Length: 497
Image 1 (cartoon, rainbow, N blue to C red):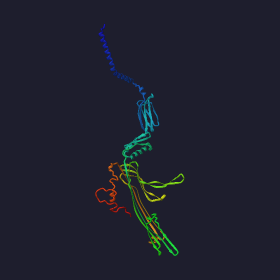
Image 2: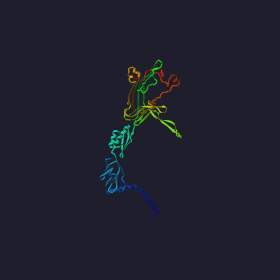
Image 3: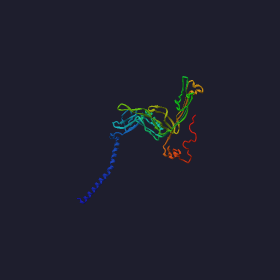
Image 4: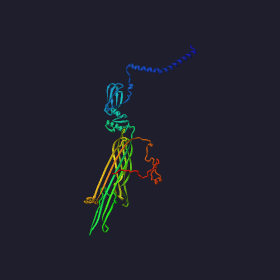
């Protein structure tokens, strides 16, 4: 019979052993699980078969392929394929050469997909196919000519990207791509120009005109009485070359008197000579970015009568007439478009015009004898190529017009010496020389302090200087003798032959 003390000791030892076993089981369970799994895998390999039923039910990952037209690609499949599906055979074609190898061939520009299946109908591989233009040759050509330009295909179009030094290079790349695709509207030109040059154009329009007019004529009139008969003689010779006398009242009149003190013969001498020089100089300057157009206008407008507008009252009468006018522009204008082709070469499309109001060919008429003037215009429009800083005469004119007329009484005016009393003659000579010079410069911005203005240093004269010294502006500089206004130290002007 066991004592109570021994029974308590046995129970305590049994409880401790059970607790230790439970703790050991919890600690060793994670370590024993991989061993069981490894054994399970080894058993599968020992059998020579791998169950792909679980993995084959999951769809294969779709891959993307990009091909050129007429290009092919070799595809290695993960396992044996027995069937292939091509969504659009006109765009791409797939050929199976072996159980795990296939060829994909691009036929036309477009997009389609290709799916491969095994003997059980499970999907082996899937490809999204994009057939584009073959741009490898074009890339090589652009890389050689324009290294900074990239080309990519988008459907049947192409996209140009990258950076170039000038707009001409960007246009050149676009033209090459247009030749490839066959149409310019299929080219998207996204090329960025690194630095666009600025061009300043200086245009000089210089004209010198010389006019010489000489007029000489004699008008005779006589009144003689013979008994009861009276004879009156009057011969007036006009100036037709100039269309009129220079000064209508410029004449010298002499008369011979008879015994009664009455003028029997009257002679009027008209002689006038005129010589004039006109110089016109205009130098407009304008700056524009390469490839952009710029316009400069300096001038005004003058009114020309076009008609009369009247209002009709409620009673039916017409009144309150107002003369209507239209305005015509005159002055200096410059319009040009520069393109910097390369270092030192600038292509220019230039249009310049210098016009002024003139009394030549004017009309007088209308209400209150209104005089309508004419416009004298010099215009040049052309396209040329000049290096930066170079000058060229884009237009020029040398014109000489000579008119001479003799008017007189037939027969009598041909008598030597005495014939001058019965005729008039006038001589008109007009000479014009015009030149238009253009000079382009590739310029850059500078600080404001490096620029000078036309009014720098100008200050109006005070009232005392203006009234006592005849000055219109103040004089600066070292003390020296100032020439009075209007004094000329030497001869100057144009030489007239």
